[in-house]
Image 1: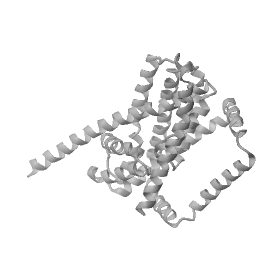
Image 2: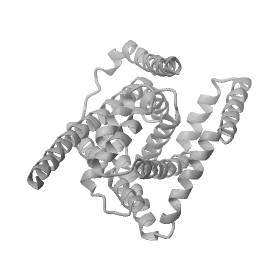
Image 3: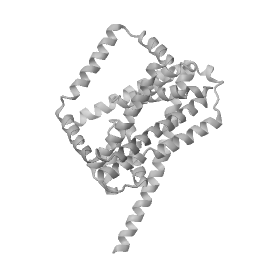
Image 4: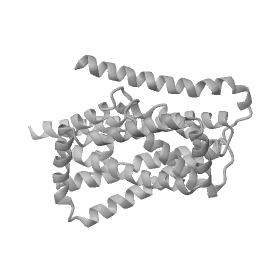
Length: 319
């Protein structure tokens, strides 16, 4: 079992490294054409601030769901600390260590593992569903139709048929795995007490809608810091990001969708800039997001240490 897990992690990192090398190689080969690319300082600062604001408030609906599942008030601070302490672990190979860390830390905040897991599943599920709806708007855009046509022309009909057949078969087989079916039924049972709480669902959906809006504005500002784009293109750029994020999230081969998200984002952005520049934006986008995640993880670590110190001092006073 250990050998199988280690082999899976190695394959995931190998695939991510291969994709990133594929992306970086043309960038290195054409670096001379990128000498004129400069950052617009105002837009990059604003984009970083907006992304920081978005990632900070990302745990607000998570806190609401935790309160609903546990039946007690869970503060935004506790949800923020718990989530961001564990989130940075998702880049480790295996893609499960972020969740494992989150569940292991939940007891320190007086939360049960089942309630925490159910809240996280619903939180990410709603985010993914809204991201999918935003990404679907690309179907109606001229840019996506042209991009899709060019992409599909590079593959033979037989190759596409095999790919879609394998994807369909894997999707069907998931429903016949007893362990997954059991967990799905257990999760649905935990949702029963929340179905009557309409206020909770409305607030969570509104929060996630606003979060996607913040993410779209942040990404548009980031792209604008590297190349001039019209504000009227903000909707399409948001859909580009949502689509690339969704595919990267659903790819179980690489940690954090590493490489897959950047590759797809680079393909989509060629509608607004040269290929070499689109590759640069896609690669820097990962660093842009990772820098915010590291910063928030550091803040969460300090908050957690302060919380532990307060708890220990309270225990001493009680004695």
